Length: 128
Image 1 (spheres, rainbow, N blue to C red):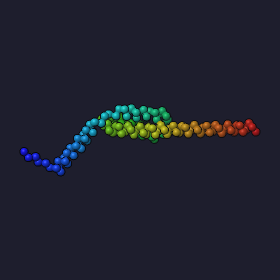
Image 2: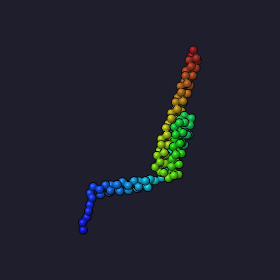
Image 3: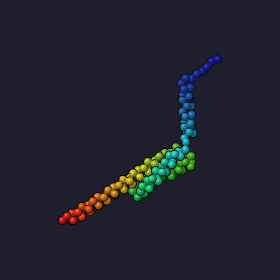
Image 4: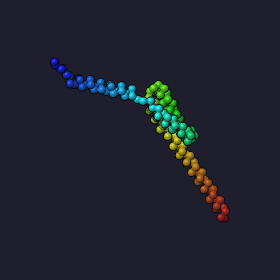
């Protein structure tokens, strides 16, 4: 019995089959990003509570829009897009929360400086 081999084209076909199998397996094996969705929702809520709506409205709005897109992708069972949108929403929400906290800290520092200035003026008047 004779075996006929086509060394060049056989390897090419095997390579294509392997890539196709990996692609199909990769698409089928993406789990629903339920944990990422929960973490991202918590980040958006935290940013909102931190004052993101007042101090970082653009970043908070972007986070909320991306979270909505992630939820729509979950409903379509497009888990890759859902994960990506949820991750981006989390980053935007963290930016909004950090910006809000920094703005609040700056405002508090300014109020303390103003309070110190007023106290110095009162001390100067009292010692004159």
